[in-house]
Length: 124
Image (cartoon, rainbow, N blue to C red; front, side, top):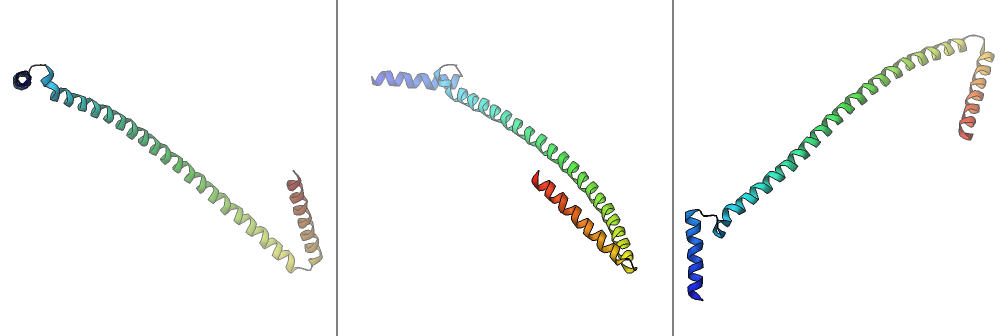
């Protein structure tokens, strides 16, 4: 039995030194398996990085679109504020005159219309 082990050990050592493709070549085949696994993992990482790149580009595009919409809304609010300011100025000018009775009727009518719209929307 000891002679058999010595022969096997000698065979492993000679095949490692001579480069034969026997069982002693397990180091090279293990290295190849690790290389293949690394390449497979690299491909997976490349795919994930590519997906993240496309996602970040899509997020950037969406942010630009949302900023444009906010700028448009800002300009719309500015124009509405200007219109409302002009209307308030006319109401103040109207209240300075002797037409206070007309102003009260107009305010009561506006309150009635707003209440009517509120109840109509609420019942819907």
